[in-house]
Length: 398
Image 1 (cartoon, rainbow, N blue to C red):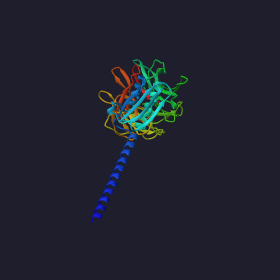
Image 2: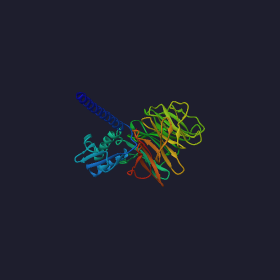
Image 3: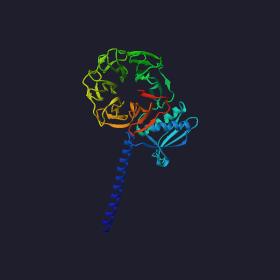
Image 4: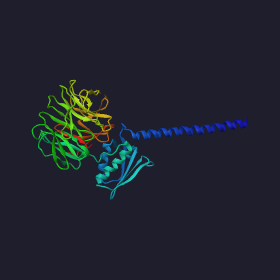
């Protein structure tokens, strides 16, 4: 009997140990899976990050700006989930750890470029770990700056407004910017000859060629993903309709034929479809159509009335657009197939960054318009204060 009792106790103890081990393993696997899932998907909560070390004031300013653009909250060390350890000497060094410092995600030295470039690279590496997205901090933006009530000029700068360069000096009205293939050109509508005409501007040579100068409206050019086609709005046959042509304006094809106004076409990432706004149902709504021509299909935008200025995310999942309320313009996103709209912020003219996570848009305050960047999942926004003047119509490099 005693031996049986000992056996039962021993067997029970082994079972308890094995069961505890099994539960711990299951917990560990589940935790790991959750961590991996969090790192690979878009979080809707800002990442709590603390920056420590001896970074120079310039490097620290750049790093803070970039991380906040990327969806991080810069917090005290005891409130942080992630710690950035940075130092500036001959070059910037940086490493990312968890709050305890026991888990290290990377430890790198940045030797190329200016202090700003090195800080951008460090920020990009941090956000790659947190979001799984590639850096957007080496991208450029194009935008217009008002020089008069009805005149503006095109500028190009770093994504944060630094190193601006003026592209045009026409003293006229410009509308609808679009980057060309390999970001070597810009398309836009200019009134410099009195009529709204579309031009292709070679940035390296400063040379312009006419894409469309028909009688009436020629506006809203958008280059296809392969850089070979242009979608645009023309009114040469009556009301404004969507047309597609080769990059030089040849082989023009009419896509829509309605008695209503169409506006602001953009391309799906695979180049097979166009999205645009149309007033065929009365107020402005979003529609798609095959890029080669075909039936228009309305995109459901549940929760808002009007929908204009669409921009298709590079990953193909979302369409950002502007809706008009009684008092303001609002930036929204909707699944590309249509559905419930999420209103993100006050503003207009949204443009997706290459990471399909960050939007840039303009926001009016009185007579001035400023450029704003927004991290869509967390809804964190940052105003680009380095752009002087009243700026509008921003667009990211492709």
